[in-house]
Image (cartoon, rainbow, N blue to C red):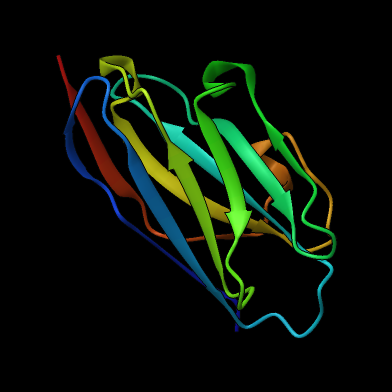
Length: 124
């Protein structure tokens, strides 16, 4: 059974940094990708970054470009989302999700498994 566990959220002041973690378990092959999404109050859930397990290739969306990076841990069972220069508009619940074909998918519906969210609050 595939399971995802997001953690690392919290409260931070504008300009600060956070590293979110997504613990991944249950995959028997390397052909999957992990996406990080966020959902701010009253807004739709949006993809902000994704990474392929097989080769570590990644994609970071414009909304966080230059302030975010996504990597697999050395043990390959955790995906980190490093967020720097945080802004109040980064306040949201952050989710990780898995796409089981190993594609850097861009749409919410392309992701097959979801973890629970972790709340990030950025104060000005």
